[in-house]
Length: 300
Image (cartoon, rainbow, N blue to C red; front, side, top):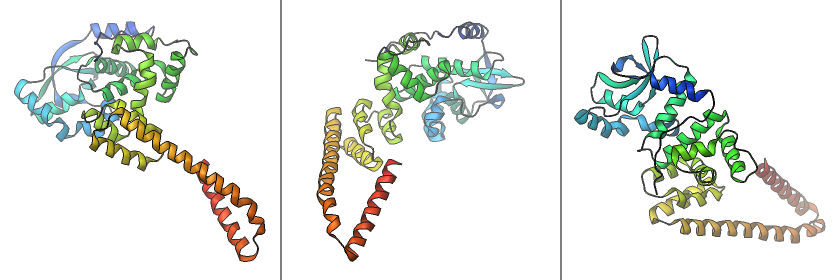
């Protein structure tokens, strides 16, 4: 079930008032595209997928803009004579492809880069058309910004809060409920797994070819090639979550069994090494040296 969207309410004391004031000063205006500047790495969609802004990816949106215009204003902040994009990069780029010279924009005046980032996260969180993957990355970016932690630290924090080992000092539980209609348990146990999907797996989820849940078991596979091979089989076969999980469990069991069998062989063979001499003893030493090197590389 898709969570009900609600208005975002900043939860960090001292930030909410500033943003509320900035939001109150915004004004709608037609702005020349040539006056708009994009700060590198600002957009969470670009961090997730660099191809999202390609001409091919924007073709349908550009065609829609030709027919209907830009229906939702982009967000800008003032920087001297320039306008710095806060949110709406796809609309801005598509408007250029559509041949527009001006675009409707909400102008928020001058602000810091940190305030601009928080406004971008707010606008991103409020949009209905975000995919599950995009929403997840935007949500974690929001939590990283509000807490000052990196992605891995945020995930660890959410796990500790869920288990009752950490007080929710940043109020992320309330923030997630208000913004996305889901709680810490969902984000620590399910959404965090979306972060660990490969590019191919994310594309399958975003295109609707496979649900994210069906791909979670693949994360148990440490061998990247084995994971990719099994993913392709699951994608082509339309496997369910249970089919993927059962196959991964079977492969893991086989791997453990092979390791156990190898241990038995070595335990039987090692006591017999002292019976070797001459060339056979030298060859045995060479093989043991190779085995030691393999083990060292595996644990490095």
